[in-house]
Amino acid sequence: MPVARFLIESSREDDFSSVALAPVYLRGPEESMEWVKETGAMLLELEEKGYLTLDYDYPLEGYPYTEYRQSDLYAYFCRTIEEAKGRPGFLGDTPVLELGSIAPAE
Image (cartoon, rainbow, N blue to C red):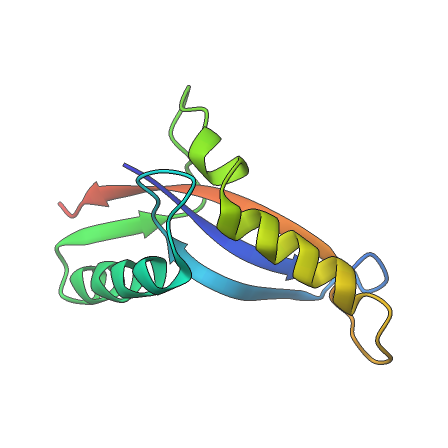
């Protein structure tokens, strides 16, 4: 199954990367922040108990992740980063959609 996480990176600091929201599992592009957070907490709990793995090194081959790229939530995240760019001391100026996969644990 597809999963993603929203990262904040910096064009000024090569080593700066921060997870803003993860895991993000979407059924469609209109999912609410509340639903994504609740589902993410459930997925993390299942991973901690050893039932599944969340892997951002291996996105699903051939899966387009359209609902993630076109989601209201990702658009909001990108707008938020754009608005924050001009604030003094704010390093994060680049939104990143990191794609991954959910799989049953072996």
